[in-house]
Length: 76
Image (tube, rainbow, N blue to C red):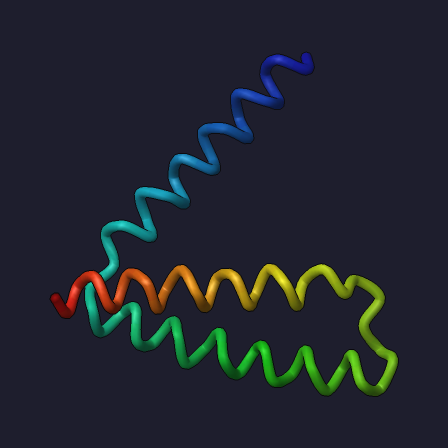
């Protein structure tokens, strides 16, 4: 059963990777705006002590960096 679950997880990660690669510039810009809004909300929640899973802040920051990298590569 463990092998099936790990295979499913790997397939899901591969789907996400393909999805990220196939986004257009407009979609990437839209995603960047959404991520920045989400990051701002997370900062407010963290400051108010309402965020039990603080690792999400780091994940969002890194996702923003990934999107910015894709945008810069697409513009060149």
